[in-house]
Length: 596
Image (cartoon, rainbow, N blue to C red):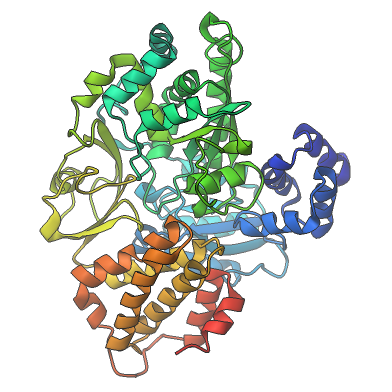
């Protein structure tokens, strides 16, 4: 094997030593070197003509990049609430016991480290684990944990583990437009070419398609603004970073309908005049990369990507896939663009908006996987056909990631306007207490609201649909979500950085049985504070689960309002240490310890 320095130089050459490729360079080098020593970061900084502090700052921002040694087997348990309810915490501790390793630390021999990570996008087939950031293990149980420990101790390469352990099923329970029969590759593109860019844009406008990422911005308006923006080059970006806990619909769409998604991007390129497209694929979906690249190669060979698409002179467009490195905030479109440009995923101040100054400062339209999929079907069948589905304000269909306390978890597609109760009936949910729609940043609905309907005018959603029966403690659900937001705060603004940590600290205090009604009042005040003062939507939405559960499930909090007493099995120092690890903000926590 060539020396490490030769391999690194070759990697840098392959990425043209371009600063905007920094995240990809770090991710790929770590896959070879296992972690990122400072000497290697210095070499990369010099080659890219960047300050070492900048490169170290980027490497330290993403949770899948490591500037300190980790185990040769890096095992990360999904810490989403649905995995926890299926026993992931007990399974992790059992694996640690068998491997004689402390969670969050590297074993003395350097062989293994075990820790938690945010939702891995496998909520329909958990408990799930991510190994070395690229191999997934699904449906874990005690027997499999015992076998896993043995394989690690015997140093069996992960590639030789039983294939069924890594089986990821699509689990499409109800298909409609986007998950049903797909147009043949190129058919929708031919229809778009026949209409021309403006005619295609008019069909998207007539369809009244709104973005499926949660915000619901009109797709035609976004494309038109990008089309008319001044720039040397226009870009089309697909946001495939569905990091919202409980969401896995894009995973299924990319597995099942990749041609349709890429065709939608190509149709958008025709409309906005783009020559380059980028897919930002979340790091947890690394296992999809080779299959997606194979689809792109097939489309190039068929004349559906590249120069002169379908024989149309001047219609040149190609797509490249970039992998994220583990940062929920990169689901926000401007943070995603920062990451694509090789920087920390810190949301930008807007305006200017991406349609005016996006990727590399050029006009860029950013849409998510499901939106591009919908655009392909609209180009094929027409805007009026799409507008006839759903409701006047919410046209078409929505794909839902259903998980939690139900018999048939998986992916369900319904027209907008479908009742919450209908989805619960179809997935086999019984004695349901609550549904978290749209992930932690969405809405928590009680049983009194199951007649409400999915749609922008009633219950908007990015796609998650987590079910909790009456045996579940909704306080613990809210606490899990609070831990998630505290961990995922990018740290840019003080209200979010400190506020999310304060929320988690108060909830931990309640959980310990040391809380009072004053703590509940403080939590309410924090919720109001974060709503109006944070830099981006992450902080503004961080207290949504707290607000909804306090309002609708108050007894779940009141049972924790006890006078000071000893709680069996509770270790305050351990709890505070866990909170510090979760937030990664030891400096802020040290300050917060002095607060009342």
